[in-house]
Amino acid sequence: MTLLSVKDMKANIDQYAVLHGISFDVPEGGVFVLLGRNGAGKTTTLRAIMGLWQPSAGSVTFQGQVIAGMGTADIARKGIAYVPENMGIFGGLTVEENLILATAKGKFDKQRLQRIYDLFPAIEKFWTKQAWSLSGGQKQMLAVARAIIEPRALILVDEPTKGLAPSIVAAMGEAFREIAQTTTILLVEQNFNFARSLGRDMAVIDDGRVVHSGSMVDFAADKALQGQLLGLSA
Image (cartoon, rainbow, N blue to C red; front, side, top):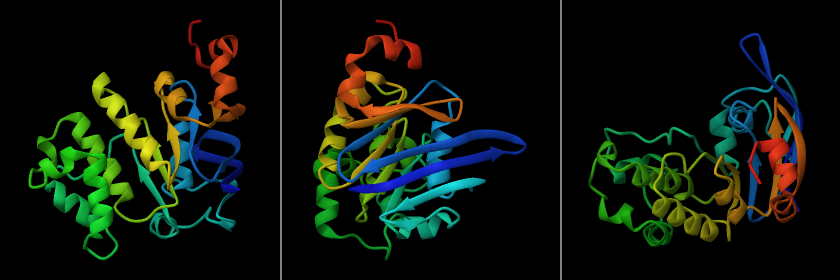
């Protein structure tokens, strides 16, 4: 079943065309990965889906409903969350306060909070600490926790491993595998090994267009195609 469908989506930044007709379908369940070189249009794609940047043409449907043209808050209420590359946390607030702001009614569901503690023990450990004092990995955990503190059908995650130590990357991978059991993840990631370990389906964006899509297993086995589309060495 298709959860999210992007068809011929175009977007401009100022007078410059950035997306030139992006199309892909995200099936329900698991992790769908958007790959591509720097500047290919991956982040703009996520922002356009989330309503942070309005598409100039094309359609975006979520659970069969058109969401292109809706505001970000309305899209979030439909069940989509966004974890930006800059994490989007509030450094001057505590971990607890950051999570409260991400709830719909300003209070926690105990079961969901316990799930976050299980996924990210550091959240409970640093509950009263201001977010600015956390390490990069802990901030990323908080950013993801904010996205799942309310029930979501889909989370958009942009470059979650950027600048993180290998041990933290591994822990993040385990958390995403667990999250993907109940919530679909649309992941933008430059770390191909990380993306390959998680993704079931994938698409490659180049110069604002989808130039390849298919199963991650097939793409991971094709070294020549990886080199051609991503510049990866064999």
